[in-house]
Image 1: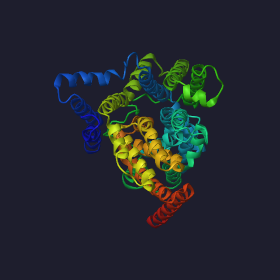
Image 2: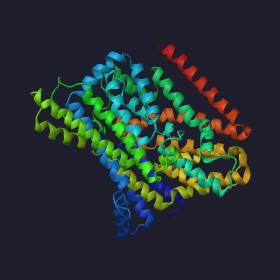
Image 3: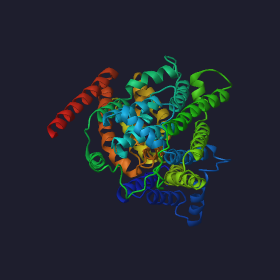
Image 4: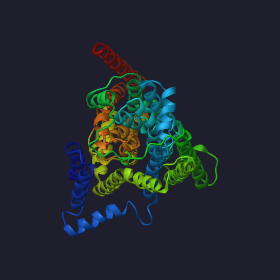
Amino acid sequence: MENTIFSLVPPLLAIIMVLVTKRVLLSLGVGIVSAAFLVESFAPVDSFILLWESFKTSFWDEGLNTHNIYILLFILLLGVVTAFVSLSGGSEAFAAWAVKRIQTRRGSKLLTVFLGIIIFVDDYFNALAVGQIARPITDSHKVSRAKLAYFIDSTSAPVCVVSPVSSWGAFLISQLGVIFTTHAITEYTPLQAFMLMAPMNFYVIATLSMVFFIAWTDFDILEMKKHEKRAIETGQLFDLEKTNPGDLQGDFPENKYGKVIDLVLPIISLVVVTLLAMFWTGYNLSGREFNLLVIFENMNVPFSLLIGGLTASTLAVLLYLRQFKTNPGANISNVWKALVTGVNSMLPAIFILVFAWALSFLINELETGAFLATLVTENNIPVGVIPFLLFVLTAFMAFATGSSWGSFGILLPIGASIIMAIEPELLLPVLAAVLAGAVFGDHCSPISDTTIMSATGAGVNVIDHVITQLPYAIICAVIAGVGYLVLGLTGSVMIGFISVIVMIVLLFTAWSIRGKKAN
């Protein structure tokens, strides 16, 4: 069943079930079981052993899988930080302080977008840190959690994929280095190529433009419009009947002794310590060479997140303990309650991530990506449609596998091999189309780890995030797809870029006119 059309069944089955049933774990479980049976040709015992292996590798893969373990521990620690910030009254104090300074919904939305762009070093870190900072502010202005998740998700990976000083940038520059060595390309360095590819990433251009437009205006469509209307009219920021990873379920006593520092200090420590740890690990692992690109390529992001999480959670606990002297309601039982509540709030995200990793492992065993890649390599494709086709194919691969990095690893070398044999001048546009397609597919996939992280950071149901973000992502993808068609057929990056800008301007103009008529 490997490397055949049947390899598409498990991911598609899981995704369809997620969208139909709205039950993520059940859907992922069905995808995992079906994948295991397909890999082992429906042999019961072997399939069960492979199922166990798929979950075991999340924690033990020829040794302790510290990458995954550190990520899971960081998520739990972030739940603890959130709980103690709430228990100490820091969230309420910060919200009251912020409302006096950010007095409009537009301001709260724009702040979230700017934070998402500024915190660009890593998509995981971006999604969870921006959520912690922005959530009290957007909550106070009745911005729906679905809208917050959209802003977080649309400013994490799209910014990281065009930023050379990020974990994504370091990975992609190293990938370009291998490709350039393979094809003896000397016209530019991998870093120069990466920078040149940024304006060719039409999906990122469309997405970031869309984010700023949605943040500036109150124009919403489809499911997002329903979430925003409910938030504004009733103050209900999310569906109370659904499980929202990252949202506290415990009722803490009202605390009027909280101060802004009770939230700001843990969050600042989280950001600063994590960044310092990233640079320090990168510096050490690069042989103590002070080169930013080399440092970013070698930094240990999961370990850095764990150190930042430990620091922030410790500070959050200490800030609450200091209230024992002044707050009569502060006691040890509340400390224990906050610990349990914080951990429990993150368990849905933990379970979903572990299931998503297991499915990703089995999809790799089925060679789903390799099968999709052969669709390109085994067919005679006109040069003009190659950028568009690779954009679509990479998007589908990332959507089906839930992994943009996995899609990069498979299709960047394939795309380079195809275009170097036909039209070497289109190398960078083709590679940019692969990057754009991977980010788009990742945005739409309910089994993507970044999708799960963004929903967790915002405190909203994963499926609600997917469904509300999907229309915006598809619109941006259509704009990008047309841009790649124009680029491929004309052979001009500039014409393709201009076509994208024109489509964006026309769309926003039409929406603005429609919004004025509606009012």
